[in-house]
Length: 510
Image (tube, rainbow, N blue to C red; front, top):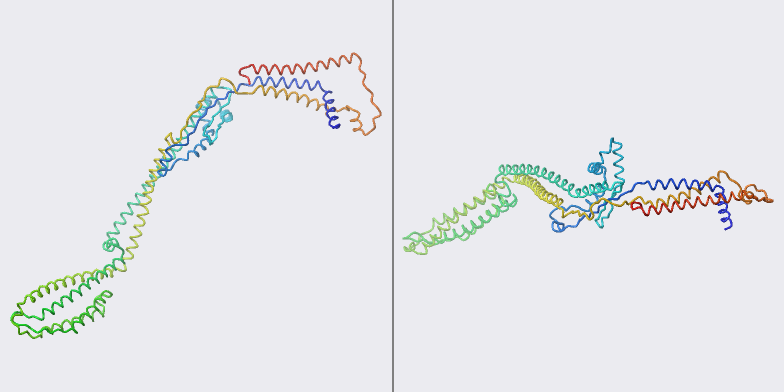
């Protein structure tokens, strides 16, 4: 503690030695600083507040129908680009600031000065933004704020509408390209169908394999019906063979063994025809055997002995059997024609067995290309309508609306500079400068102010000290100097108080 006290006393003695230098420097700094503060021009702050409404009832109503604009991101982009150089130069032209620039260097200076005076405040949470301009001209400040407010509001719809128009134009170009592709694909598909009439899967109700299976099943069914009809006809023939024309009758002479062989050969022949063509050796052999058995049966029928009953030819049963036999013969002929037609169809399908898969593959490729182009075309048409709706939505004020809460006005009272604070800071700085100057001079021209400093500096013991005896005239002069020093400081404080009072009284001073 004693060391600290000694250091403080040494510091005060050093300053006291050059007190007049400190007072002089304090006066100079204070007077010059106060003059500068009083001469500073008044600064006027013009501002405007605007509310950006990003909530709209159209959002939930149009959700899923179109791409809704990201209004929050759009507002952030507008905030970041509002004070860009192109916008600042545009504002300068709007308020006629550019006429003051005689060359490019001065123009750049005006741009930098304007950018330093304007600022934008606000948060995304409240969506309330404040545009503020601080300058010496209140009317110019109002015009600048009004110009930036106009650019801020206009930027909410122009950019999105232009982007939407470009998107619609691009989609229109793509739609025209796909229309040409669709026309070319339709022509190719039409020409291919014309070249391959009769071999296309759609004409037969399915692909080639399904058509082949259906034709084979139809042929087998027709052959089975034909075999059944022939059996029925043969049975009627056997019944009729038991009766002859009027005047004679023949004894019925049935041969069950021969009929069973004919039925077995017919069944075997029908089974072979479902698997092979008519030229197959097994089919040829069975057909020859069937003809021999039928011829044998006819020979046996011709060699039958007539019956001795003269009234058998006039029996109603006989006439009814003849009518049924005629119907059976007609049905057999019809089924034979059907079997022949189905056999022809199966033969044609078998002859085309090497071409059909290739035709089906080419048709599938053409249909796939056509479907891809058609789907892309329909999607582009939907996207175009969505882009148009999105562009119209972006230009509607209800989606992103701006409400000016406080319009820019010409301020009547200055907001700066804060002369009271500056005046006080100058006074404090002047006092500090005087003390610092006195201490610096004491360090440049050092003297021993006490026995302790002399002993520490030399390392020699101090035997004693001689005090200064002042004469009466010297004492009077010292007192006058002290009074003058006090008066100088009091006057300085008085000037500070008068300046503060003047600043408080002035309506334009702060």
